[in-house]
View (cartoon, rainbow, N blue to C red):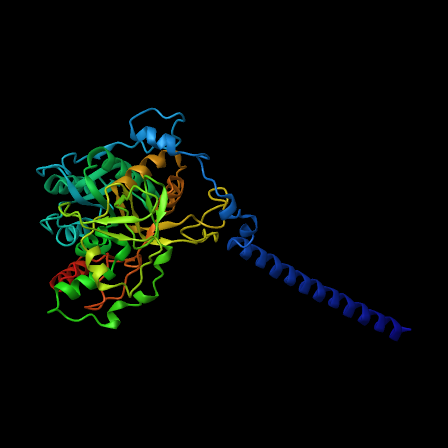
Length: 456
């Protein structure tokens, strides 16, 4: 009998331990399961399920056609619908004289440098390199730095002193921070529209960018043919210089230019790459006419619409295109374009975006904010369209949203490098911009070397 009870006790003890072990295993599995659910939620895996398809469903407040309202604002008339978004910050430093002074007050290019208040050395380096205003005698240019406010009174006082000496700093009354970059950008637009509408092109640049002013000037003459036009001109006019090797082309033959489009403002229709509409022939032939920029010759080059740009383009046509000029009413918004980019849904990301902020699975096409070029017409249309575009904290995305509503298709160019392009003496020959030059000494060294080579 004692043996029976002893065996029963051992069996019960064993059974209880098994139950506890099974419970622990179940609890472990449950912990693992819920941990994985938490991680997936943290990384946004479940958010994607609830995203709305961009291509078929995209709308963004204001949800309606804004063109008539924009045109009314451009004519200084009262629009039928009141604007939903205005950046009503005051200018502390205005510099209203900055874009005036030339005989005819006509400028070719204005650099708008988005700078942080405390970046004194970077601004000095830019003034002594690519921001030199009299870099080219036939290209009237201005360089303006735009900043917000800083909480340190000593830094503010130093900024005021710098502005008094150089008279090139525009300051608006908002806190200068990363998530206020949209405010900085749109206050830059506001300043330009108020004080500086006498330029044909405007280039927005961060203060940690290398910029080749020479390549910028070449690009804005004929964006669709850059850098091939520059390659051809150097062969024709600079035969004594170093020959261009295949290694210098850096894969240009693989660039797909068919994705690039410039919109013509009058017709609201896209112009294929390689075409720059100068004027219509006035008949039903549907041809684009290219005219000499000097206006003295009646000779013009007519090219049929089915023509497409490629690297085997006849030399004769290339040389004629080198003398062309973009029309004044072109709407150019150019830089490095992301066409099918998705919002960041993982919560640890600096660029995390909730579904409430933006519910779609893709962004509209947008230009990276580090460097981009606008024609005057694009600047004005984007500025007034922003009045009917809900604020978004990332400036490049916000301008992409505004461009979408304004029917402006961003124009892509590979030579706007949003990263720091690896540097060698000859690898920057066709570079327009390169990001990541937060060391002023490095910027000056590379810019001076490229200038000596004729590339800056």
